[in-house]
Image 1 (spheres, rainbow, N blue to C red):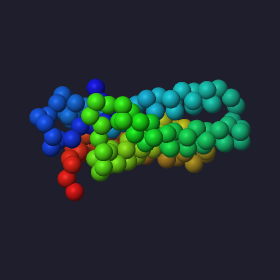
Image 2 (image 1 turned 60 degrees about the vertical axis):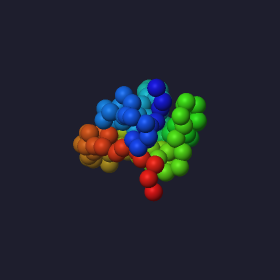
Image 3 (image 1 turned 120 degrees about the vertical axis):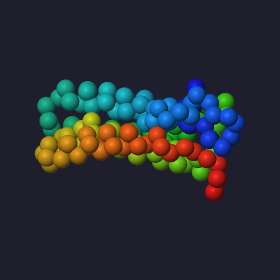
Image 4 (image 1 turned 60 degrees about the horizontal axis):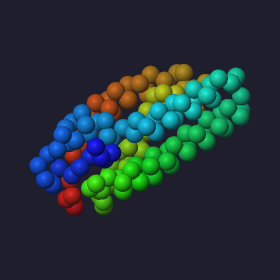
Amino acid sequence: MPRLVPLSDGPPPSPDSTYLERVAKYIPGEVIAAFKACFAIINTQPASAAQCIVGWFVFGFFFIATPVYLYYMNLQSRTPLGGRPLIIQLLIATFSYLVWSYALGGPFALHDWYKEYEFVGGIFLILFTFSVGIYKPTQGP
């Protein structure tokens, strides 16, 4: 199964183009899992400036790695996407990473202000995940 959603104006719809399949593909689960694993390790240490610096480094690394990883996964697929559909899906996946990383806490949770606004991440995560599958990629202009 390809990692990105196939074009909807191509051949007849495949099972990969259902709403739930699109939701699953727009959310970079493997990147989020690696991010969460890193923070499980970071959070084993007492709060410190070094922990905060490493936390923000990990956040930034995966922010950059998300589109790069998905771009190379796309190249490995049998029918790689290109152009606008690819760029839009990479942007959606990168934004998904931002939403999930805030909702999971990550480096944000290392700051006092996060406790007051943590609920915003949870609500936005639900709304975003519920609606992200609406987008169907097409080759149009």
